[in-house]
Image: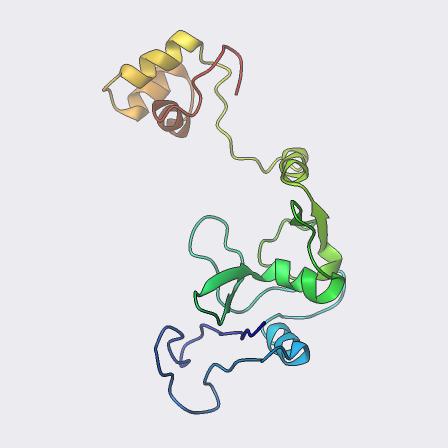
Length: 185
């Protein structure tokens, strides 16, 4: 498989151009050279002591949590998460159905000592135990309250004050996220 690491730093050529400019910063194909890819990958990681996070210094994803990303040079530019590649470079392939999770809860961390394999269910349980889930609490709302909120045209802030919940809870309820039996969240 032919692949290349394409950094997205200022001064680098645009990786989407058909004919990149010649020079030392020109994206190159590794032609399957594992060591060259690994050297280039780790040059974008702030490697430090084993107990501290090794932060990714290259391109990051644009939405939600900011994960490091690496673009593969192929027919279609497909961003790969940097922490997953760090796992593959140090521990081997990731089995199907498995996720690479962070013990440190730092999305940009690529320290293999801070990473472990688990399922998506393990990821949700880990987030719940560490109290980092961002699901709105709706236990105060009964099913009729939720349905009334969905039908209401009043501003969300007004409804939030009336029902004693957050504006985010009102927004999510209006989008149908929390319509269900009473007492569930």
